[in-house]
Amino acid sequence: MTEIASFFNRKARRTRLGQWHTNGILREKIDRQAKYIWFHAASLGEFEQGRPIMEAIRRQYPHYKILLTFFSPSGYEVRKNYDGADVICYLPFDTLFKVKKFICLANPAIAVFIKYEFWYNYLSELRHRRIPTYLVSAVFREEQLFFKWYGRWYLKALKCFDRLFVQDQASAQLLAGVGITNVSVCGDTRFDRVMEVHRQARLLPAVEAFIGDGRQPVMVAGSSWPQDEDIIIPYFNEHPEIKLIIAPHEIHREHLMDIESKLKRPYVRMSETERLTVTNKDCLIVDGFGLLSSIYRYGQIAYIGGGFGKGIHNTLEAAVYGIPVLFGPNYQKFREAKEMIAAGGAFSVINENDFKERMDTLIADAEFRQRTGSIAADYVRQNSGVTDKILREMSLG
Image: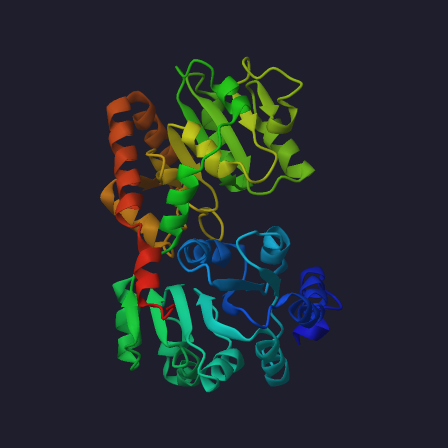
């Protein structure tokens, strides 16, 4: 069905075309004398969870090379030149012939699947060849097929893993209930990733010039959608005591113009900061990718977008800098968001009035704002170290 869909869907077509090149890439680039650890990430989010493990292996076990595969173009196109892997390609569809061909050409010594990847033919063939296979940063929920009376066939895939590294105790308990006990509760590798990003955060002269003397609190709105902007921007327009840095999730022309149409205070786009002065502006619009994780360091309050849609984006990228985190109501599937709320380092807002009340308190009470931010940063630090736990239990030799 996916092959048929490729004729009509641009994303599916790019996936199909990328898969056609996989065997050629493997024939050309795989060193038959080397030992490879194969990491598979469905897309960009899963890659970020696997990245700390890949980079730790590069440092601690340099005799291994790394093969990285993606299923989605949104992951492959962004990270196809990632220098932490030796070979990068698409993963072919999970048909028996393609699976056998791929594993024969890739010849991995170890396989690592990230979070939600359960390809039965791949897992079965790896088990048949006695190649150690791991699942990392996984989360399981009661509504998944594995735990339904009519979905027990899918358990065959889970039983192919040598070890499953899960994020929480609830996942381990669900698995134990269906007879899977080769499980370790290690946490989420994203905590390690944001700690590393924090250490490597870039200095951004344009942002520093925009902030000026630092007397005005700065709110950073990251990965915002129009529903988020509809509550953020009216508040910003009416509160000259704060500055706003807004990094929308989508930066196409129409979205940027929509943001600008709502602003009633002076603004400038990041792409224009080299030719326009920023010191007299109140809002900085980030119209490029790759800067947000470093921009959070300049904020006193963070708002994370997506919570009025399918779900919030990465809250940890902001929390690691010790600033309070706000987001919309759709956060229930995100363990870190629930735990930060419970700890007092984050807040969910359900509408414009709720947002106004939270912001008024955070702006007026600097001590409360700092205390809340410290709770957020402590939460990230306390949950880091996951990568080392996983590596200790993998058979790397």
